[in-house]
Structures are given as structure tokens and as C-alpha cells.
Image 1 (cartoon, rainbow, N blue to C red):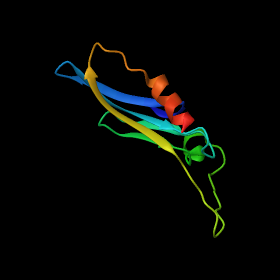
Image 2 (cartoon, rainbow, N blue to C red):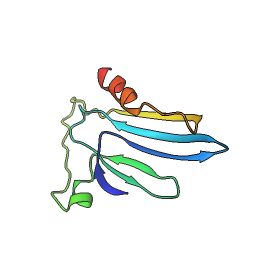
Image 3 (cartoon, helix red, strand yellow):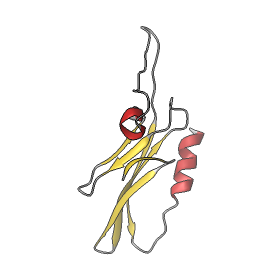
Image 4 (cartoon, rainbow, N blue to C red):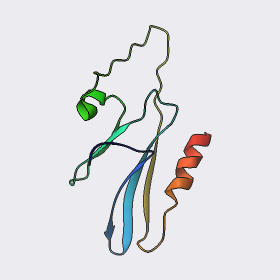
Length: 99
């Protein structure tokens, strides 16, 4: 997957009947939505700076003045559950938004 925006992205697989995975959830209060990038060797990235790389749009530039804060928030859910059990990612994402 390359350059798709979403509320979250999950990367998982089944090992010994256990679904093992990770979910990245960028906060909606970040300065911009993130683009996701994943590779089949285990890489999963949420990147709010990749506007040019993912869309061929303007290059990302953020100026933070001395003394100002620049904050990015991301939720990370690492899990191992029985493969047949559903995972409520939307519920975990909603909890992140409420913090």
C-alpha cells in the first residue's frame, strides 16, 4: 500500500491460530491527515509530511517558531487475539479521539 489516507491502518497476520497485528491511528488534531505506506516485510508508516511524495503536490513545510510547540499524536494498538475473534478497531480509534 502506498500513499492512501485513512483514519487508521492495520497490519496483521495469523500465527498458530492467533491474529497478531498492529494498528496505527493518527489523531485528527494533527496538522494534516497522514498518508500510509506499508510493505510486505513488516513496515507500516503513517506520514503527515509526505504530501509531495504521495500526491505530487506541494512539498511539505512546517515552520515552528522558537518557543512554540508542534505536536503530533498517534495511537498504536499492538494485539494478539484468537484468529476468529473480531477486533473493534473503530472503538479503539474513538478512545484515541476522546483523549
